Length: 395
Image (cartoon, rainbow, N blue to C red):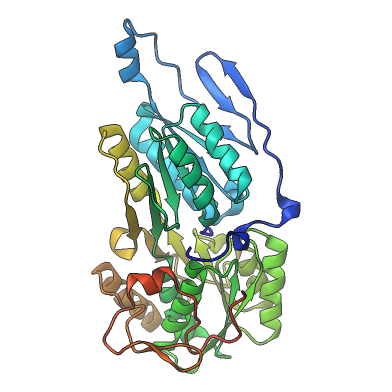
């Protein structure tokens, strides 16, 4: 994530449409002791200035940690970026005046991101979060140039002494949604509005399918790729196309509620993704796979404040309260609700139920043997569809 956001694919896959790119022009406005970066709709949460300290040493200890977040989408997307910004607000509530947060929204993946990271460092930010896969290379480049700044990259796989990676097991939410989808479909045709063919998204399509197959072996899944994390008209068109093909349960790995809204309009079912989207289609909405970034952001900020921050890789799921299937439709049959709670409890206990064999790919080749778990390499680099997913993965 997109939202989002994995492994050895050409960086070009993740670039937003060229027409959407825009040049970031930044200016520095000095007003009292507060700095405001004007970049791409940038906003900064300002707090009352500290009273002048008697000695420089005292002033240094009183200075808040400046924490920055860079978002690929708008904070109002109701999905991926909205969920990250909810996490930002959680650390503000947790740490108060000990930190000062900033966010820059709608930053395209690529060169624009590099400029924004560099600019934020120049403004004195010492902890910088980049929240989409395509920020990996730009962030790595800037991190190497500023070793005293701590960088955190969502969904990537490259680290540095001052750059960590973190992500949520969104595939666990997709699997739980699949369990409901398999029970609720009448046509046995499921659909996914997909963003970019990176392992994260392929993994979610497969997990959704495996969850559905675990309760209904007759289901099949199709995906339409829209080559964007956030493009509501394209997302809607993809959903409408699949509905016209007989799909009656939809999920998306994109960042707007357009898929759910299309389902509501056409009288079929769909899920919310990244945040609770139930209000956008109350009748169509079966549940939402909700990401909770708060626990990780609190941990990272606490470590930075304590001087104990270290580079590493974090991948949390249901067990760590990082992903949940929430806001289940009250009209869901009791047996379906109970089944989802049972599966969720297994995930909360740390059981790897999603990608445990036997699993076969589209061609029928066994990729995970019975009783075995998919290893981290397969999960992080997933580049195949499981049996039951129709079509092919775009190159």
